[in-house]
Image (cartoon, rainbow, N blue to C red; front, top):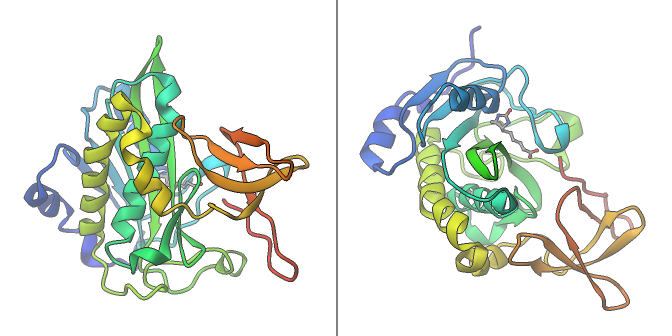
Length: 274
Ligand code: BTN
């Protein structure tokens, strides 16, 4: 398959070696695959080490959260999965998933004015309110422990045109004004963020990154619907990684999974995550 390929993934191995860090070795860069998360899962079962990374220029069956498919124009995105052999209790997975989103958000915020780049709970990265990157964290559990964590992320990088059905709620770094992004460096930044925070949160919880999460919380203060007939105003993220929602009667709900929707103001489009 001939891809309209940008050359910026070709130096990935050198860039990661120069940057150091414990993630990114071994690195497999493929023209096409089914899903890099599936490659990483297979790798985990076959004994691949902590830090192994799979990158693809195109995916035939890219997956998103909530069993959705993940669209990415071939050769224009950063599509990667990293295998983390982090020992953690399964109950920590939601916190780790948040922190994975933070690593991607911070890498994007090195290329776009940081105040424009926010994290929509649990781990969608938005620029000016539109989704630029998504994160899919999957875990392999052995007994009472997480044996392996697969952190997959897709960042829309060079894409200039999105399918019509996505263009009102998705964007790319290029469309947002960052036209000279090097995907190898972007990958290295995400891995550096994961390297710094994942072990910390796995062992000590969210406490040390709570302030950073709060500073880029896309939902804080907005009205959201989170379950059939349930809604309120988002009031932050708690220590367990749950979204705190203040209902109109003042009581607090804590949302631990599933989908949240922004409630459309009159005349505004309803935004849903994907
Ligand atoms: C979401 O926002 O729903 C998560 C999207 C995650 C997409 C990435 S692309 C690389 C990795 N491989 C996959 O199949 N999914 C993740």
